[in-house]
Length: 248
Image (cartoon, rainbow, N blue to C red; front, side):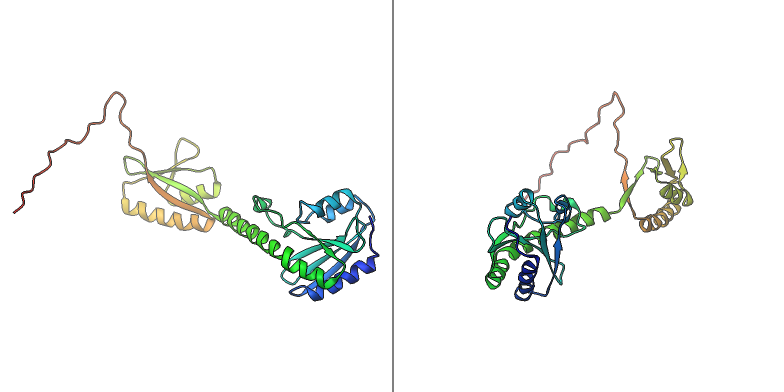
């Protein structure tokens, strides 16, 4: 691999930081062990030429360019041509792996040793793809975060007698329920609130709901499904003939 001198690579990167849009800094990294490069380049967001170069050639040095908003670019010597370099976007760190599902990698590009031409190629070809892919990942990550932040829901079911029943194995939820009048049933996970006094029942549900919400648990009420006794057939409502309305 025709590596440039580290100072030459670093000097080229320094000029790029001045020519690329935004405010950039650089970090020259030198590698002594071939195995280390796979760990150090794990965030390189490429499944094309840069990934192939990293897989097939020992990496002696690279430069990480970082913009003040956190965007990062990976710069390395071209494995075949001394007057060219490879540059690729770097994936955002500490991002849920699921957020990358379905997002096309903003594959890296080849740039010439002319810094001005290289900066223009990066700005017009690589950075737009980088921003598009990054926006998709950030949107996915936000959606995942919202989903994980959704509270658990405890369902209270009305019985035919007007009681409310629910089940839970969470000791904190069980404690709140029992503190507000729910009785622990014969089933170890069943809790029941009497409907003899509907006003008291409503007050207990509101109070328990407020504490459950603070705990991160939502509350939902539903009616138990009506059952038709075995051996019987539901009787349809009598059908009355439509009333005729005469025009005046």
